[in-house]
Amino acid sequence: MKTEKPILVTQPVLPPLNEFIPYLEDIWQSKWLTNNGKYHQEFEKQLAEFLGVKYISLFANGTLALMIALQELKITGEVITTPYSFVATTHALWWNGIKPVFIDIEPELGNIDPEKIEAAITNKTTAIVPVHVYGNPCNNEKIQEIADTYGLKVIYDAAHAFGVEKNNHSILNYGDLSILSFHATKPFNTIEGGAIVCHDEKTKKRIDYLKNFGFAGETTVIAPGINAKMNEIQSAYGLLQLKTFKAQIAKRKIIADTYRELLKDVNGISFINDIEGVKHNYAYFPIFVDEKKYGMSRDKLYEKLKQNNIFSRRYFYPLISEFSMYKGLDSAKPSNLSNATKTANQVICLPIYPELDILEIRRISALIKTFCSI
Ligand code: T4K
Image (cartoon, rainbow, N blue to C red; front, side, top):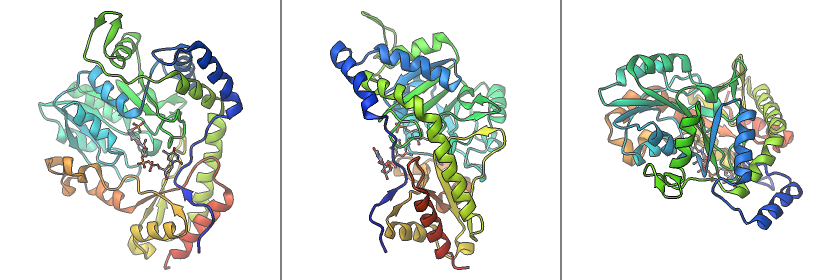
């Protein structure tokens, strides 16, 4: 039985076209397209206010933001990180010639387990790169305590964490730097895009140089930078997206609550509940399939949903440590990553996006219920 319209794991929200056109007309008229134009400047200003952070630097995407964050802090040698993320987290290390050292995750949220950090530190370790997986905050207090003890930097991959707050403070203020992704699949998108959040003006200035080839003036290059700038069209688009973000998150919350209500009694299916004191962004809705209890494997359920035109995704399977370029590392051994391996083998991210119809959520949940053997 197939529905007419495929339901994808996500669908981007675009700003109203009629509101975007005046911005485009202005850009067309001014012919200022990129390189820190007025919309870029305004977007940085409004974003910092909106997110409750001091300084933010826009990027062409989240991967380049992470690569530059590592450059800015001159990270070398080994970095402790998670295998349970999108592959870009580790690729950014690789592009900087850094050896990733994978540690296991804590099973509740899927974030790195701070208890595993100390044992992974060597005399080559310079930093920790944790990920706020699905936008759920890492245990930053514990991570910071260890970083301070051992003199390590902390760069948070906060690609999923736009707008997330804990105890009324943005979690983007954790660590030395945080990076964001504004990719089309994220709750806040500028088509492609990203940012680095930092705490002081000097750091922002250097980051801005680094994303523009290292130029600190017409004829001065202070470092081997790269081209990672966001353009004026995307910046204007981003300004409009800010206006609707809160309403979009409210819709996402309703979807997450509905799934939780409808799936709460399905044997062998579990999910992550909201955390007290955290303002979530509902970027993803992961469920975890316990094959024995549910009576069907995660992959079978994934295929069954597909046959019903529901295109969920297994974020994050396979683990990054399973990919051929990282598999040979000592820390990539499955025996070192038992929680991550288990979680990666159980996860399915169900469709969630503001325009997802309540009837579709009911249909997806009903199917998951129907397939349950008990
Ligand atoms: N760190 C973390 C923790 C990340 O999750 C990511 C990115 C990064 C770093 C790097 O940030 P960026 O450099 O990307 O800014 C997607 C995204 O491409 C990626 O940004 C994201 N994480 C990752 C989790 O998901 P795919 O390969 O799953 O994308 P794709 O093309 O299969 O799209 C997923 C679904 O979205 C499809 O079913 C169709 C729908 N879709 C997609 C696009 C692009 C649309 O409806 N419209 C669209 O324009 O990686």
